[in-house]
Image (cartoon, rainbow over all chains, first blue to last red):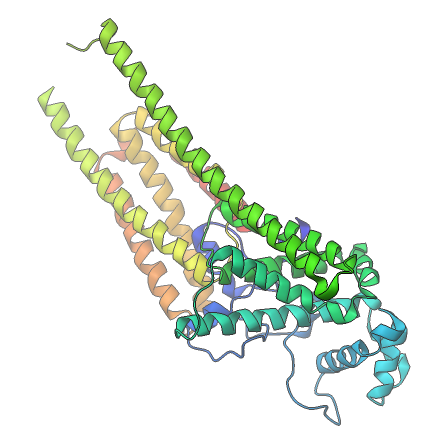
Length: 300
Length: 149
């Protein structure tokens, strides 16, 4: 829950929450707001609504806006340097694992001194978080694109359970190229210095998936749905790590079953709710009838 | 008895009008929450109950009590709206134009409710200033907490 605090949005009464655009530091995306005010936004680009996007904010944020473009001779900012360095380092991860060595190798590719690894205060955590952020951005881009295609009628809207399953599968598939070293990455993400950022990236995934799946709740359902999906995501990730079936079939079946369970549970909760209400009304009606029949407390 | 019920009916219809406007406000903000991809406050179920208890409780003190509660709450909320509007104006009035328009409209409606409350003898409520201060302190606390949780 600490990550929810650090997510940096102004919580609150409807007004305060609606005004979070001024004070977002990181966390849930507000690209929808930008679309609303007509600002052009590249899909998959993390959006910070505040125009004062300072380095201070970046250092506390796990996900930064990517500088698109080819490898420049000189780097425009430290931020761009970090991004390119970490992206280059990813190639060496299968061989060196999620470690400073991989980052050092990436530095060599960019003609930088390996000493540049000193700028990563969280060590390998920075590399893992960079990768996770990239994946999240990619997922976001895919979901936005799908959404647009459905809007323009090029694609049929999927049912909720199928949509959620496909989205989680898409996100997990991004991990597959690094699956041999992923257990190491997961344990790095659980380290105390990285845990807030990794929780916030998990929050980001579940929020994106639910938003594009059509969730528009603003009450405790908002929390329940995201918590359940986070649980499904984590358990599926663990299954993926131990899956040896061809094409990871077992994992996707597991995922489908978990999503169906969750959806069914939600439906039965609703049914229980309405049955409960009907029962209650039945009792009240019976009580009133009895009261009238017995002539107690009559108003004349 | 007939006079009393006539007055009661009139007050009830005033309250109902205010209630309709508040329902519109709530609907609008629920939309805004989704549009801006904002996290709703965790304490919403609690505020639902607390709000009901406050309203029902002050109504038990009579028509003046209900109006006093209205005055107190509307004053708190107008201050809150004004703070929000100020914050947005300081940041970038152009970009937040639509939102600002919504907030200003709602704030004006809340001020109307406030004046309606005063016009219906809110100040004649038992322990008016004590009641008003307690309710306003509660509102401020609720706003503060909800902004964080």
